[in-house]
Length: 177
Image (cartoon, rainbow, N blue to C red; front, side, top):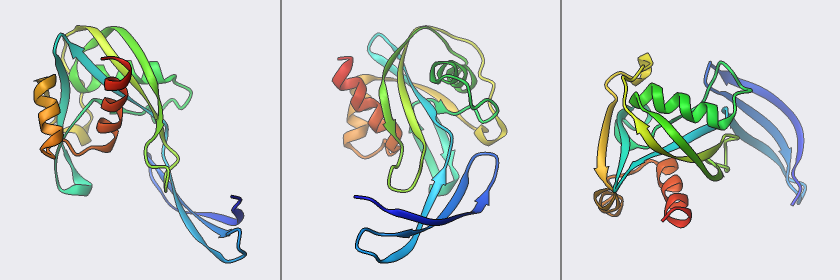
């Protein structure tokens, strides 16, 4: 299927994203608009130690509640940073941990229906603990250590709600275990 882009303009931008509105022509000839959120690629990290995983518990403003997630993020200051560099940096920043070994599980798009960002999932092992270096928007972030069996139960109970965390965990279950 081919959609023709007739024009494009940015309607919003900040340091973390740009929102683009494209005028398009659908294959049947009808014209319309399509909104696209441009965000940098990011890394999702699954820190694992024996039969436990580490997650971050943080307030998510758009949904008005806390969310339990794997550490993740992008490097907005260095778009040329590799996914592995970003993974190591985000793990240290959010949890204070460093990984002796990072294993790449694969690539996925975050929300391909309206955004450009894709993420690479890493399993972090041989963990060394340290102090987090949180950004202001991460105030109140708490690192939690959970048994994998408890994490599985929380997913089934609807307590784990972050899509990237769920997608990364699926890769982990299919490729790691």
